[in-house]
Length: 137
Image (tube, rainbow, N blue to C red; front, top):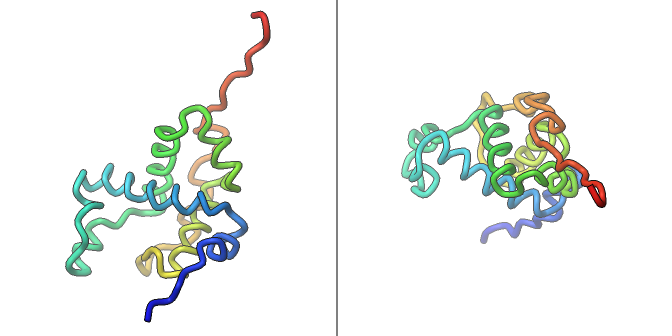
């Protein structure tokens, strides 16, 4: 019998992130794999561990892919949306990912660590906020 996964508990274990952050990470991972390994890489299930390794992305690659995915999905509001979910740093991406790994929702290699996600970039530098508008200008 398979274990029922409580997504809200996984997100609490990660540090109190919103459950929407899980969906963002999952979809952003698929986007990143497609960016790096081609359009069909995330669609085809791996039939052996060697194939799985060939679709692996590093922490830095995943952070870059998540940045691109966030910008495509939310445009100038990406930083605001991620912040609302509790995601404010690349280390937060790593915390969510490793909580998902611990829950059996994702896999990692022996070389993957949370440190791979620390300080990859600053959100205030890569996610531009919309310029405030002034009334009557």
